[in-house]
Amino acid sequence: MNEDYFQFFSIVFFSTIIITYLYRLIAIKLGFVAIPNLRSSHKKPIPTGGGIVISFVYIISFIYLLFFLEQTTKEIFQVAVGLAMGGIAITIVGFIDDIFNTKAFTKLIIQIILSIWIIFIFLGNLDNILSLTSNLYYWPLMLAAIFLLVWLINVFNFMDAIDGMALSGSIMIAWSAALIIFFTQGNNENSVMLFLLGFICLAFLLFNFPPASIFMGDAGSLFLGYFFGGIIVKTFIDGDIHIWTWLIILSYFLTETTLSTLMRIKLTKDWYKAHRSLSYQNLARILNSHRKVTIGSIIFYICWLFPLAILSSIYIDVGFLMFISAIIPIVIMVIKYGPLFSIK
Image (cartoon, rainbow, N blue to C red; front, side, top):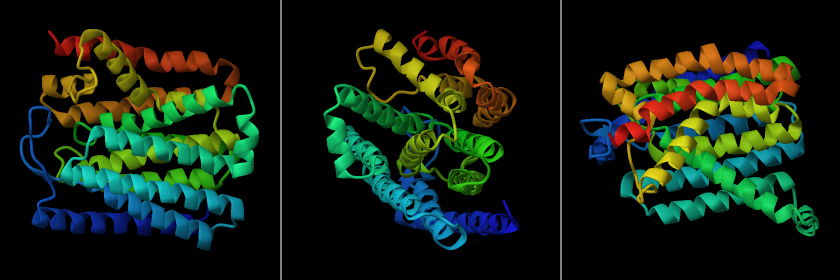
C-alpha cells in the first residue's frame, strides 16, 4: 500500500471531522435531536442522524478511490456501485427513522429488499438467478442468506445503545478484516474498502466517544450492518477471508445480540419490543460509565478476538475451535449480565 492511499485516507479522515462538526450544528438548529426516554442510556437531548455523514462520505470516497486511484475491473466497479445504491437507500431509511420514527415493520421490509439486493449484486445477472432456481437447495439457502443479512443489519443497530460501542466495534471489525486480507492476500479492493471505512468511523468516533456529542442513529448503524453484510459476501466469494474468521471478528456483536434475543424469547412475551437488557447496557449502568464499557470492548477485541481471528486465518482446519474460544467469554458475560440480570 503506497503513500497515495495514506494521503487519501488522511484527507477523508479530516473531511469527515469537518463535515460531522457542521452536521452537528445544523442538527441542533433544525431540532434533529434524540430525546431521552425510559429506554435511553443518555440523560439530555443529543443531535442524532449523524450516520448520514459516515454513509455518504464513505460511498463518495470509495467510488472516487476505485475510479481514480485503483486499477480495477468493470465487474468490481459494478459491484461497488450496486452496494453504494443499497447503502444510500438504507441510510435514507435510517435517517428518516431517526427524525420521524418510522414503523418497525416498514424498516423490516426495506431491510429484506436490500438483503435480496446484495445477493442479486453478487449473482451477477438474471440468467444466473433463473439457473439457480431449478436447484433443489436454492430456496432454503436463499432464505437463510436473506435472514442472516437482515439479522446482521439489526445486530449493528442493537449494539448502538451506549456511546461509542457500535462505532468502536465497527472500527475493530473493519481493520481486523482489512489487516488479515492485507497480510494473507495482499492489497486489494476489499482491504481498501475496510481500511477506508475504519478511518471514517474513527473520525466520527471523536464526536461519539463517551460522553457523546452526537449520535449516528439508524442512519449509521443500519448502513454499517448493510455494508458489512455486503463485504462479507464479497470476501467469501473472492476467497479473501474464511467464514470462521469472519465469525470470530463479528463474534462479540453476534453473540451478545443473538444470545440475548434467544434468552428474551424464553423469558418474556414481548421479546421483540425495544429494551435495554443487553449485557453491555447493564454493565454501563452498573459501572455508571459508558466509557469504561466501550474501552473494555476495544481491549477485548485487540487482546482476544483479533489474535484468534489471525490464528483462524492461518490454521483453517481448527477455525471452529477458535470460534468457540472466541465466544466463551461473551456467553459468560451475557448469561451473567444480560436479560437474566435485567429481570432480577
